Image 1 (cartoon, rainbow, N blue to C red):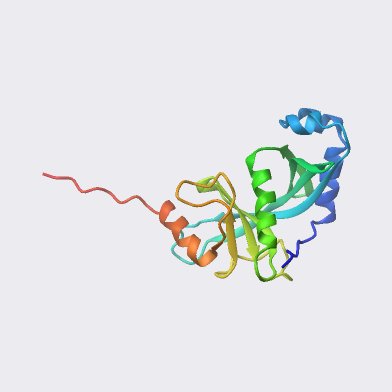
Image 2 (image 1 turned 120 degrees about the vertical axis):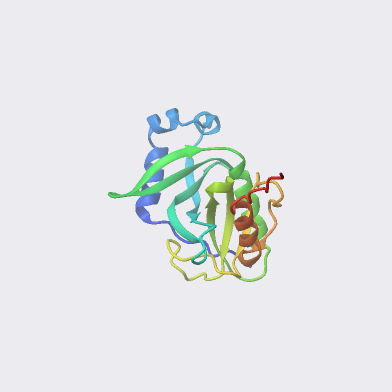
Length: 195
């Protein structure tokens, strides 16, 4: 079933396009593939980026909050980089360009998600404490992409590189993966001392 991708806020898209049109922003980017690409570039496949906070909190489930929108930057028939925008007090603004394994991994996860049964709204969910990024397949396709929390039946697809012991590109139900993440980030028990 096809993914029902959300539309990015127009100011976020405008800021990504403006950065692509700025020779200074492109030249100063730490993205050799972006700087050396000869043809036109376009921001595509917008995904809202959420961060999962307080995984180990005792008073309820962790909370996801929107931190930006990510656009894959296409040049011809391939993705060469990504652009991230962020919400500032003045509205949406370009943050940075980047490249690396998460770009290819995001494209692969999106292709895999297209083959899953049921409709989903694709998002990105970051777990900074584990240096982990997942494709979050939200079951409510009509939801505002800037809001909401991972539902127990939503799917999380860890992107490569994933933390040790968590398989990349395998869909996990939130109800199954969150306890694993919580356990990994929980307090380390003190070892008893012997007399």
